[in-house]
Image (tube, rainbow, N blue to C red; front, top):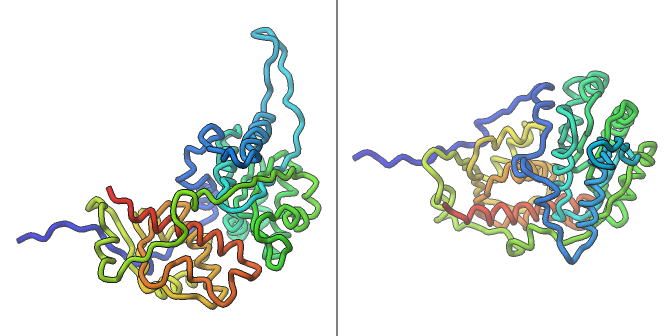
Length: 349
């Protein structure tokens, strides 16, 4: 009797992604989940007027690139109003900052515009060298930086210098950021921290504050789903077509492999996966490993790969006072995303 075909299972350790500068540049586009993002399909929360206001301000920022006609067919062209070359979206996680940033990228003119995380841009500088990175990005209409990292002074200074040169050449900048360790008010907003850390560039940025509650938590309950080990195999493939590919690894196996892969390449670990399986999840007390998991979950969330996990709940992995420390905002974002991803795995076709 011929066995029924099953989905292909892999271990993430089978993948050691490599990327060069040209591949990094080509990949500087919004994540797949925001491929169709627009101001029109952003859904502002009526309880937080700043969300609708953000759409208006960002639309004006985008429209300022072009010219508008007035007076009908024979009307003269009127230049759009002058705007600051940079805009910073300030708000808690889950209020739609990335959706708005992607919408701005889609709205911006020209074939040369880039969207990436902070670590992708610093990786580009590492691959090309500073001057060649400047040359590669010069001429872009817009540079979008999601999750501008403020907790590494060296990288922050590097990016500030890079942005300064790009703004001087006519490029506009849009960014969101994370709060640096030990910053006051780190639990929610980071505008003061962002402007202070970028120093000379701060005058170029308009801060746009966006209030709201985490939309992911509005859609699902407040904890990650834990799968019983006896049901793990079934849950990992339930509802998937036979051609689907899933990963199946112990939590420690993933942690160890992440140490051998640069965070800028984490996306390559999950390319093409329909589900990510994580067995025997346990609490973390090592900050380095915790931050690697955060960076990895960011890429898993960008790719919208559902997670099936056993052991303790993924939202309980950050131990040893991590949620009270300087990186708490990163951990809270990761928790929010892991909750959404484990719930997504329960939806079968």
